[in-house]
Image 1 (spheres, rainbow, N blue to C red):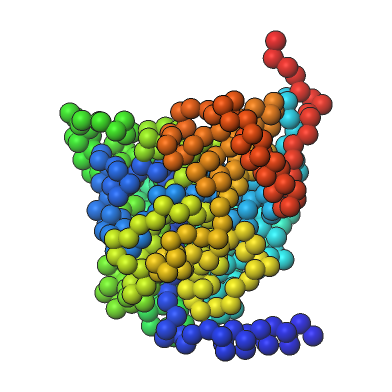
Image 2: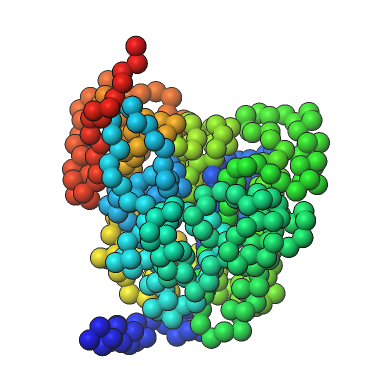
Amino acid sequence: MKTIPLLLFSLLLTGLSASAEDRPNFVFLLVDDLGWGDFGCYGAEFYETPNIDKLADQGMIFSNAYAACTVCSPSRAAILTGCYPARIHLTDWIKGHVRPRAPLAVPDWNMRIDHERVVLPEALKEGGYSTGFFGKWHLMPIDAEDFEEHYPTNHGFDLNVGGREWGQPKGPGKYFSPFGMPNLDDGEKGDYLTDKLTDAALDYLDEQSKAENPFLLYFSYYTLHGPIMAPPELVKKYQEKAKGFDNKKNELLNPKRAGMVESLDNSVGRLMAKLEELGIADNTVVILTGDNGGDYPETSGGLRDFKAFSHEGGVREPFVVRWPGEIQAGSSSDVPVIGTDFYPTLLEMAGLPARPDEHRDGLNLTPLLKGEVKDLDRDTLYWHYPHYHRTKPYGAIRERDWKLIEFFEDGALELFDLANDPSESKNLAEEKPELAQRLLKKMQDWRKSVDAQMMTPNPKHVPKK
């Protein structure tokens, strides 16, 4: 009996969507541990990113784009589901830290995306798209009974190259061959992971250019996550550049990490060149962003803190979109956007019906990208992290330019005016108590509305003497 509704829905999609020739392809590039200050187009001077800077010049660049969490797995789940991590109860990196004696106990959170959800690649597949996944997955439980049920190919992707439970390269050679990743050729000694994944992605583009269906190439880079390793020639290049470099912006002068950034940039350049070579660049949307902040304080471009912290450096991300014929080249936006917005946006770009029951926390960004509107019908973003990491458990809300952070252990509040204090240097909670309490109440109401899991007093807590 279930085949009839599915058939009807397929026919509905066919009738509502544009023809295959008119529907754009998608190249979605997700960078791990990407700091807000890692690209030239975001102010970097030590790191060199000419291809990414060119991509930004060809499309729209955002100054207030956010990941849905300050660590990876929840942010990645938010992109695929269009839901806040709090709503789907997937709120920490898998499998998270254990703090058995901490003051608060972590809730029994989810380490997988429920199969009842129709995630973005599944929605695109139902609309006639081919889907390929390359790189880091990290959205499956480790050693659980249903381990094999949560690979990318069990969540809407036709092909999985490199995706498994790992949050970072753990093969014998780490970033160098051998890699120990599914469907990825180990190549030869000295081959570099970012390059090999790019080789596989280019092969995918070659194959898809001959097919009738449009495609989603979802390239989820392992870089820039540790271990920090880069090709020797690039390490040498940045060792030389670091000598006498005038570090006016307090950038991270790490030659190995700089080499990783340049390898990423080379990958983007190769992908763009392949799209041009195949004659499909003008009908391909390219999106580039990150899953959380960089892993070092100097990668945040002057923002406060970095990965896993509650402040801006842990969650504000580069975000670039190239959409030929639709986005004005060289345009920019300071409107706050977040990872949940990709799902409804790609559906709209593809001419497919929205799925509001799925992407419940995302907004369609296409009117903003096209320049049809200057703002979105949303003034508030939320974060919920009932876990221990570099920071203590917290919740956060951004309403327009005001940001409030609540720390769960003691209820301490921090209030910042991001318009005038983007580095969050001055806590205004005591100066503006009414505003702080209003935002706190709004965040508390939101948590109830999404059934956010809360922490509880830990009976095993051992106070420090």
